[in-house]
Length: 221
Image (cartoon, rainbow, N blue to C red):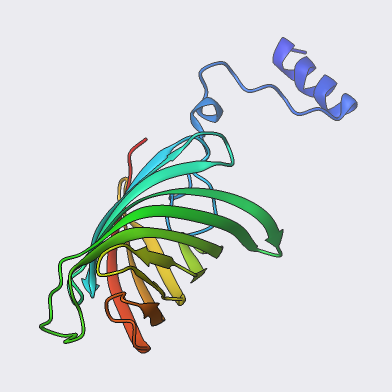
């Protein structure tokens, strides 16, 4: 009996599988990394990602960095061209629970708000500036190679010009992202917000604001 046959017989008798040869194909099998997302509830696990978004009625870029396996920090720059409002903000995201195949996370953003006062769509707009606090709940689940995400946001903005004021703009949105090529992903996001406020804040009369954006994501590392 050859030594190879003896090794196979011993493996069968002990219930163990034969060891793979060094340098064999099994050594090259590596699990494919999941597509990162800055919309969903999954953390970046210490990695980083960027996102560009454009459509009605926002142009924006977002960068996120995983600082632990569960905590992400990031920066976002958004311009609403319909209201000429600019927001530069930072955020913290952390998963809090899992329900079936869905993951739930909390996100907290703090930003600097600037309104340039454009009136080509909203005639009650005017220039202003202030601070925004934006808590949010995020839900997401994997759908094949893509990611389905749902968000509920409650941004609260305090304005400081013209005697001061405030407005809130609760929003619900849903999105889908899928791998495009290499480290790139492509997605679509739709949302609906209601905006109203008080004091001397711009556009404080209640109104509904729709949103439809195309997303382009990139795994930085």
